[in-house]
Length: 221
Ligand SMILES: Cc1cc2nc3c(=O)[nH]c(=O)nc-3n(C[C@H](O)[C@H](O)[C@H](O)COP(=O)(O)O)c2cc1C
Image (cartoon, rainbow, N blue to C red; front, side, top):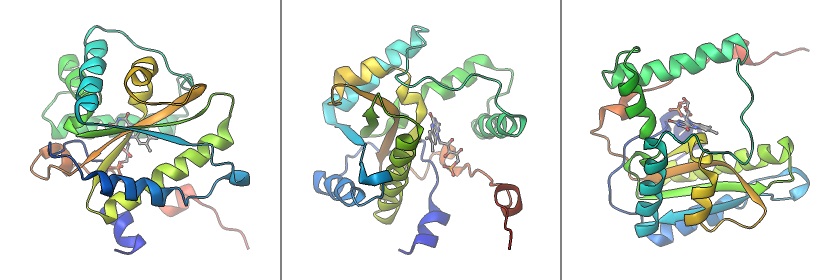
């Protein structure tokens, strides 16, 4: 598969088949992903993969916290709302696409919560991963971890593996730490659910639009 095909065919997968991936396949993906670049070659990242019974336990604990109304605590705080207008608009449009596809009215709070809960159900995936870096690091290192995320994602696409990055999985950082093997002193930036895509689930039919080139880039010569 070439990079163009991988980029064009990738999307965030929000429903998975229960069968686990072979350990060797998971190992190969993360081993290759180590080749990603980072500022000063600092490689500030750590990926903690959770599978099998540990993944089921993680799912159970995350859902329990979400259901109790507990808002959790992140290692790295989110930026305060409101975001710039254009970003708010895209964020809303993103949510509405899912509500519409799932037959949930915008005013239906319970329906929206059901969709949000899917994050903590790990979208039914048999595997989850937490991407972390030392808490003392800042934005430039977070960029490095983002590059690692995309490297992992494209390697997975090439191997027929679906995935979704999840900022939501940073919400209950202490629960993640209880189940996953995250280095002492590291903070969780985001998580990921992954596995084989359930292509029959309607939620996987959503495709997000992108801004035109002139809106996101400028060229001077
Ligand atoms: C760092 C990061 C965090 C994300 N967090 C979540 C999340 O918590 N829940 C979710 O459903 N999608 C999450 N997404 C997926 C985005 O919503 C998705 O990438 C975007 O809408 C574009 O859609 P696409 O990936 O299908 O092209 C996240 C994506 C990234 C890159």
